[in-house]
Length: 116
Length: 112
Figure 1 (cartoon, rainbow over the protein chains, first blue to last red):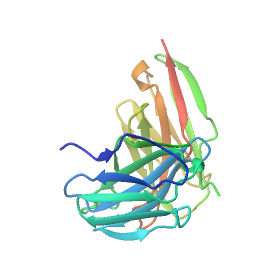
Figure 2: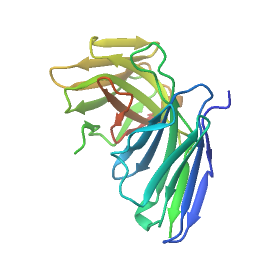
Figure 3: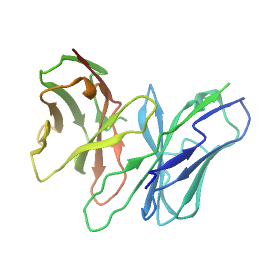
Figure 4: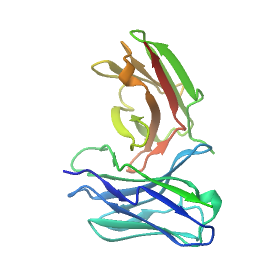
């Protein structure tokens, strides 16, 4: 398997523009997570889905952020309008619960977002 | 409100010696703990985990210790190797949920 795929790997945009980050989870995984990494706050969970349904979006910073999962193999995180403080590395991760109490999450390589 | 804290942003250890990374948590509902390792320009990768019903879990050179009364866990790497140089994240999962709460990470540097 190719692992979790994220695109683009790097994104540079200007304040006020719309940004869309994309993620393809590992095939067969039923959980998908979006994280943001910053120096100040480390790795923060933004939102996660189970079987394409959003379960917990309490980490989404504000209404400018939205996430969708239209099918089991694709998810987007959108920021509109973007602001310089949104500059960070955004990670997507997926996991499969199966019969275990907890299963590890597999992370993508991340998207480095810079908002000028 | 940082529920998982890694108070040491960096740690430097001599090759062959033991590396000890520490993590504290505040939420007593956490019942599963994990360590992830992250190299530059890559996503974090799972390293080792421990359930709250245990106090130790070992996997090769890596051992995780859990002290529930102190709400503290640690990762021991022995012997440390240059390839262990990375950022290490501690993470915890609340009971019944798949979400993870991460610490801020500790950058480990192994010196030859």
